[in-house]
Structure formats: C-alpha cells, structure tokens
Image 1: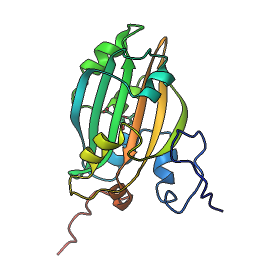
Image 2 (image 1 turned 90 degrees about the horizontal axis):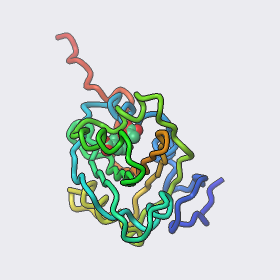
Image 3 (image 1 turned 180 degrees about the horizontal axis):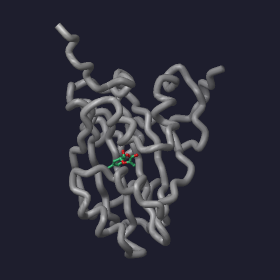
Length: 196
Ligand SMILES: C=C(O[C@@H]1C=C(C(=O)O)C=C[C@H]1O)C(=O)O
C-alpha cells in the first residue's frame, strides 16, 4: 500500500511508503550508526565541507529553540564509501547551554560524528523525522552541491533528521541520501581475487 499524499514540505515522524522512497527506507529508518552501516560496505571517509558559527535553518532554529538571527555551531560533511559521496550531513549545536559538545565537535575534524554519538552512553537519540527535500528547503542546495558532483540534478532528495540529547545539550543532525547509496552492496568490501 503506497501513500501518494505524503507531503514533501515538512518533517514527518512517520515515513509513508511511496514508490519513490521504498528503496531508501532501510537507510532512512535504521537507528544504528550510519557510519557503521557505510563502513560495512566499503572504504569509509568523512569530508568536512563546513565547520563554524552560522545560522541554522528556520525549522532547525524552531526545533532547537534558538531565536531568529541567533548563531549556532554548524558542521557539514560528506560521507564517502569507496571515494563515492553517499550522504550529506548537516549538524547544528546551539551555543547555549555551553558544555563538552562545543569542544568535542570543534576537535572532530574528519572523524565521524557517529563515532562520538554512538560510542558515548550519554547521548540519547529521539525520534527520527523524515522529509523529501526539494528547493523549498534551505538545505537542498548545499546537499545537491555535495551529492551531485556528476552534474545530475534530481528535483528532490530523501532526508532524515535526528535529535540527540547529551545532558542539557543537544545536536540536530540532518542526513541527506544520494541515490548511489542504494548501489552499495552488503558485502561492500572487494572480494579477494579468486585463487588462480
Ligand atoms: C550520526 C552519525 O554520524 C555521521 C557523521 C556525521 C559527521 O561526521 O558530521 C554527521 C552525521 C552522520 O551521518 C552516524 O554515523 O550515524
């Protein structure tokens, strides 16, 4: 049963199966580390695209309780598998309350945020929300730039958004998936050459 009425214009807590997203559902719904899931399929790398103070999108500011025009710590990365970009990730950390996350994020470099979020027991992940991003959303353009280096330009991209709490602090993590992620095989790792 597919629901074609899925609204594209907002984050939804339920992912309604449609012909357009059915292949992405295992990736969108997996609550384990996305980094680990990609690592199981090939050579993993993080390419840091942006890291520093910036303005969250309107919906991020609303979700994090940040006032209009208030800066936050923004981290944007591309996740690669065997040198292919498969995910664009955008993370927002409010500047207040201050705590260890400001220092930990600043020191991450090209290590995966997931290595922190899923290793430290203090992080609690809330419900994952889903959205089909299009040019109505401010993250669509940077995601397209990061994901579509081959010049193709899909009119929408599937994304999910997770809220991780750590004590009084929290981060909002948006992950946007390139269609090429569907080509990663479970075995991923190149099979050893057959014995001659
Ligand atoms: C949250 C995770 O970390 C991944 C890595 C990120 C980074 O390094 O900035 C951001 C989001 C995720 O795609 C994960 O691996 O599940």
